[in-house]
Image (cartoon, rainbow, N blue to C red):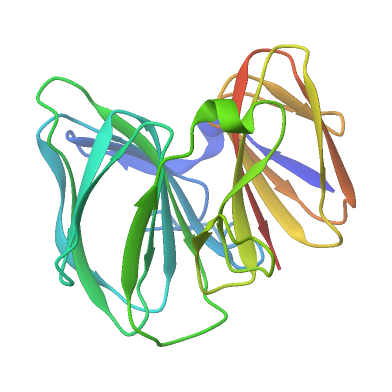
Length: 232
């Protein structure tokens, strides 16, 4: 089963400094059919104007993964971490027992576009932490690379406390790829381009909610940049 969730059907709002779209119920957007997908709770598609951002606010017991599509996001938190995550790179924040952080686009003339993904933890509590890592697009050309994971064997990925992995891939137009799901849920969004997955086509910003598919066969009809969450 693959359900297409077109970008135009997503919730969200334009707050002036922030244009946001929600794949799942979030803030003022409520849809009983889109509360979560397995352990995946939030997938927000945010565009943040230059010189603006989210002021300090708290989180607890949530795995938060930020995939930057364009520009730079600057993170600062109550643990003393300060870091800049640029387009194509990934940051994770495991909120654990509690953390406060801010996220700003300090670039004077460039907007920041990102996916912010929240996954429900399967290990609650624990010391909060934050980390970031570059993931060159050349390294994920033609196949999925694990960016963040709480599953065994994903030693090169950023760690998260949940039975899930976040993956990225880039495909040239006409290129094919495959991903095995083994009975789990998946949610896929093209950050750019257009993709066919087991006969269902999605464009930039569309969501594909996937269940009961053992293998995903992907074909890019345009150069595509993909983000996939594989979860219980």
